[in-house]
Image (cartoon, rainbow, N blue to C red; front, side, top):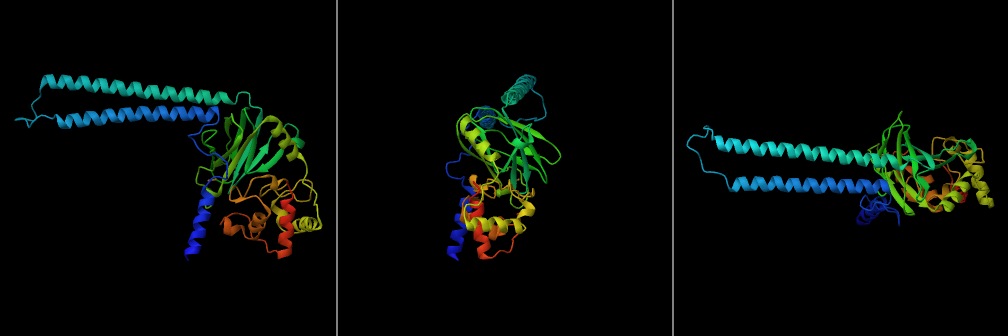
Length: 337
Ligand code: CUA
């Protein structure tokens, strides 16, 4: 029993802790959008703290210095009334000035945020699904459109534009190190523009409760220098790798003859489903099932065996496979780099 709870505890830690090396913190801004929000929230917090301390100081002073009981509590003291009116007027004017000041700060921050993507080099369509992210690199030439999942590569130092949409319920995109939060809403498009000033892996999380597996809806942003990004994009455009061994070939054939093809696409093969994530280069990604498992062959096999035990409620069904079928399919998918 103790062992079972220890395993459960480790599983929770693994689920909560960001993947190794990935940054996920609004306190470590790595781009202009998150830096602007960081400044703004500190200003608001500091100013609110000063005002709160002032109010508490006045409250304590009045409690300490209050007058003794008066003979006639209803009798007006004209000079005290005048002083009170003066203080209330000053406090009201001060409140109005502070509120207008904060509204102006918000307004200018919004303008700064809106200006970040003015010359965005890249438009990426991000669609929320229960519970994964569909990522599409738009291009005027349909043959150059890249589709992937749960991971967004971007060139470091260049503004990118994300067009956010959803097919089912409301999700929310939040990569705190890079940008503010914005919802993905069915039937509506939101646009979020940001830039990563430093190469690295930034973890994000769906930030709007979207059902049972909301917590298992992570996303990785991989910012890399332009040449590496171009090479990645070029590679993603290629059809899937050919099976490199007899086992992989068997896995390929089984994948095509099993229900897998109904939901998944593998570029350059007969598999063309669009219900689940595109698997053309599945093994080039760092995680499986939107940050739920690391990406490797054992995880692929475990996931295919019983997706429901890792992500209960996920729309991937359990497909009845023999041990041979399972290991060959995992070997084939493990080769799709
Ligand atoms: Cu998607 Cu929460």
